[in-house]
Image (cartoon, rainbow, N blue to C red; front, side, top):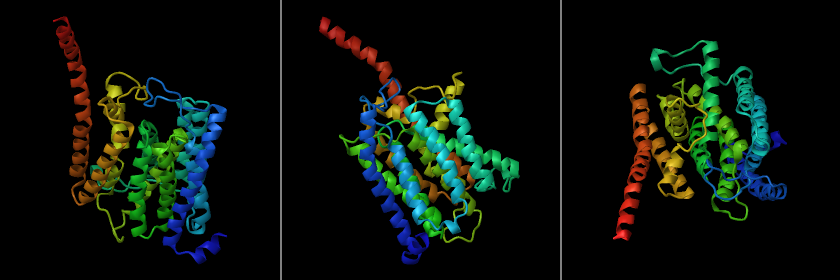
Length: 374
């Protein structure tokens, strides 16, 4: 079947077909999962940290995962893509820990161990890993043990960054959609049809998911940990391959400062996660302490709706993607400083207004009480 499809369709057509197959599978399977969730009372219940007010099914990750896996398994030239089997193996582990967390709950320790195992499958068996620091700290090629450690750290970081930013309707899905579209376009231009097809399948599944997550009342659903962890895991692979391929200058579209561009593409989930965790550590708390300090929480506190928060951060993400590609010829340190510095400024704008609002509120109440007394 696979050979027949590859004889009939070109690589370009297969990428579009993967997008369409994943979109249709996800679109028609989500309502089924919503009914199952309602019948089994599997909901994401509102709580102090949650930004939603009503119990909502959180099983869309099942649909996203299966849609991507079916589309890529059917249409990918697997004989030209030996690492695919290990990508599937790692993804299945991520899928099962996500499902358990969404339905029954799971301790962070067990989830973390499973994520390490999934990451090591990619690193040790598929040889998907960072092999260079691209000139940071004056270092290019790195030793094999350091390569394993650094790649493991990045995979875990990116995987959990998408999990942690999944706090308002459409946010994690939109951030993943823009990133997969950017990486997918770059892979396509640089004759990497396998990775472009994987990006296409993820784009298709996300388009279907966002239709229900943002604009459906009857079949509204969240992606849950299953979806956010899977998307983060897949995204980490795209980042590694993007940086690895750019070590060679013999590309139609070579990116000189690929780490800076990667950071710019994923700046909202990565920067926000690093900022929140560092803040918690400086306050003497666990970096995984649950609170409402993420950027989307700050914007919600200012009175923006879920869709408005997602739209704002989507536009910011697009601006950073454009900026990062424009800065690819800059010095690595200068480019990184610009991204981090501007990220700090933009992040603390809503924090400043929230603090100002909390300080002015008591005086507003007092003035109102004096007027009534008078």
